Image (cartoon, rainbow, N blue to C red; front, side, top):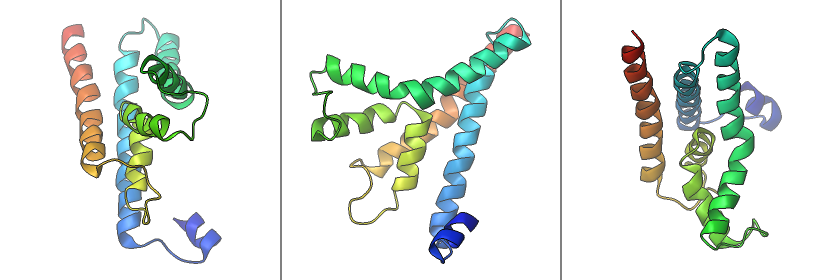
Length: 146
């Protein structure tokens, strides 16, 4: 928020700042839960680190390939990412990525149609599911390990 003030000369509005803090806290929580779950399958500390980095890389760097593969399977043009069908499909595929949900949460307050074309209810539902499912799976796994 200080960077916004330094760059733009204004402070973000309270609602925007609160949305940023909530969305960022959720993203950190999601990755912590996902990496705890992933590292619970590791045999040693090196494996746990590899699982954690691997899950982060999958959602950060490889996810665009998942979108392209799904688009190709569904017959959507994958050579033009500005195609409206591809963009709409990308929105729905991004609900299955914590980074995509985070970005859509941050875009939810944008005016003038600058955000993605999706009902915010779906984005908040995805945020809720990203908060519950990895945590629940980890707790179940942890109970079985003990």
